[in-house]
Image (cartoon, rainbow, N blue to C red; front, side, top):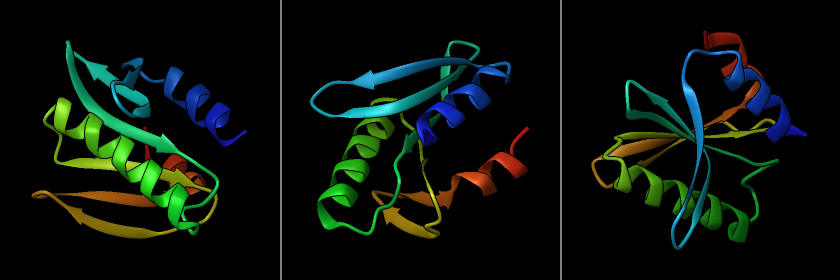
Length: 102
């Protein structure tokens, strides 16, 4: 359900929406002017170690592939900043992102 809400919100924007999959996956890439502007993962929570690792690694792969310094993991209610390879991953509640974005 969270992914559907996030997708519908992204569709209302002016950016094109894509999916990243190589050895790992990233739920959404927002593309503006032919360039990936933002990479987002959506999951219920990142409190379980296996889920956290899967979501972070998928997002990191997309960030590296598209030279992004910041990535987003949107959850039900988690809030954290994770430093990674000269950048950061923001873990935010989806509701918070929806209110501040666009």
